[in-house]
Image 1 (cartoon, rainbow, N blue to C red):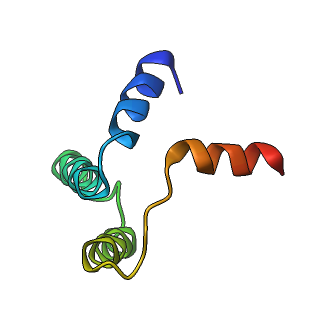
Image 2: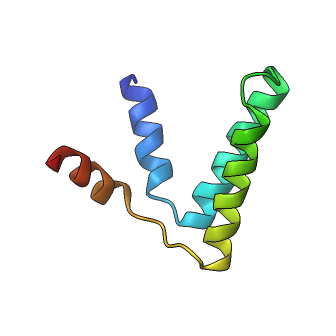
Length: 74
């Protein structure tokens, strides 16, 4: 990724889980409008499923900094 994308990603990842979810949905919808083959139905269903898990409280989001640290530790 480039610096601009990294910056935007850092900003979005700092948002609360429900707001990040809204951004993800908006991005998917923008891709659907541009090229419906860009995102498969399976991915859309998976993202919706994960969003519902976050909204219901069945799962808890992990901060991006923690995820990056885990990957770097491997």
